[in-house]
Structures are given as C-alpha cells and as structure tokens.
Image (cartoon, rainbow, N blue to C red; front, side, top):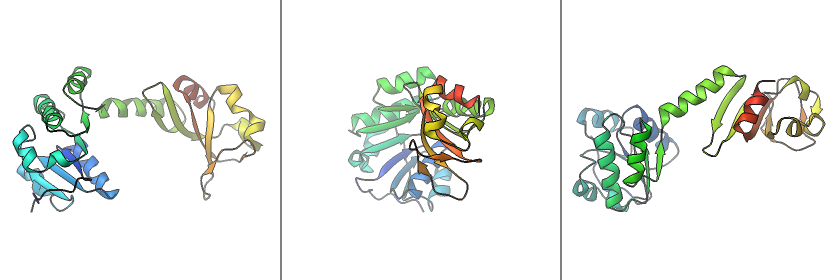
Amino acid sequence: MADNRRTPTDGILVVGLGRFGGQVAASLVRLGHEVLAIDQDDGIVQRWSDRLTYVVQADSTDEDALQQLGVADLRRAIVGIGTDIEASVLTVLALNEIGVRDIWAKAITAKHGKILSAVGADHVIYPEAAMGERVAHLIASQMLDFIEFDDGYAIAKLQAPEEAIGRTLAESALRSKYGITVVGVKMTGSDFTYARPETMVYGGALLIVAGKTPEVERFASVT
C-alpha cells in the first residue's frame, strides 16, 4: 500500500511517476535516497508503492495537501509532469510558495521552460531534447558517449585515434593539435587512469576527452 507518512527532511520529492519521473525516482532510491513520490493516478501509485520509500495519491497543485505531506520540510523536488503543462506550472508555483528551496522541473517546450523558471523552478530540464542531441552526436561520429554542458563545453568517450597509439599523451600532443583535454584513459580489463603527460596509449584504449563542443566534435571525426 502507499505510505503517506511524513518523510525525513533529507528526502527528495518526485512529482509525477510517468516515464521520466518514475525513472528519476527509482534511480534516486538506488543511490540511497529516500523519496516521497506524488501522482494523481491511484493506479500508478499502487504500482510504485513497493518500489519507493513513500508513494502518495495527491493533487500536487494543492498547497494545503503538500503542506500536510510535509513537503515544505524537503530541500529538493523534481517535477516530472510533462504533457499537462498547467499542472506542471501550478505544481512548481505551489512548491515555491511553500518554500521548497531547490526545484527541478521537466519542460517539453522552450516556452514551457520559461514559464517554469518564471514561477520558481531553479533548474529546467529538457530530457527529450537533450537525449535527441546526444543520440545525434553518437550517430554522426565515432563517439561512444557524449555529454554537452550549457556553456558550450562537452565531454566524450571515444576510441583512441591511430596517431595516439603506442605513444604517450605528451608525444601525441592531442591537446595542441585539437584543443581538447584528455581527462582519462581506459583499457579493457584495466582500471580507469587519470591522464598525465607520460600516460601511454595502447591499441583498443578508450579516451575520455573534454573541451569546447566544436573541438570535441572535430577530434571525434579523426578517431
């Protein structure tokens, strides 16, 4: 059954247990956090009741209901409501009004995101757009993984280029040639190694590189 007891102040609130919110809640639990999850759909609440710390059927736009659940005592909240924009915005507004200090919210459009920021969201997430951008980079290059930051910088995992094999990082001078920084090197069956000038790169090595997005993309094109 759903548990509607008050959660500890170090717990995290997740509102909306759809694909995004449910995945976030489950991942937080795996990482050792206590989670208070709220959804309006009683069927969804029942499905999650044995997987999360506390799961409650409630109207997340109702400040009084949130107060009764002890949400005002929590430091962080994630609003995973996407398609119901009105509920998403009103939930963020309610959380802001009762004093939740760190509010993350999912947005499905740029306009939705602007409204969320205006009513109190501290962080706006565009999961579909971010994933689409990431997949496009992986498809269009030899990257094995790619993360871009808001300030135009990125970090990527890729196979070491031929010019680096059998040489130290100082000898291959990848930074001066491509403007990227090799953060680490990973060989199959070996531990991750933080990169140093004397680090040797062998065949089959994976490089973790960071730099401005265009430079990371240019380096990926030669691997």
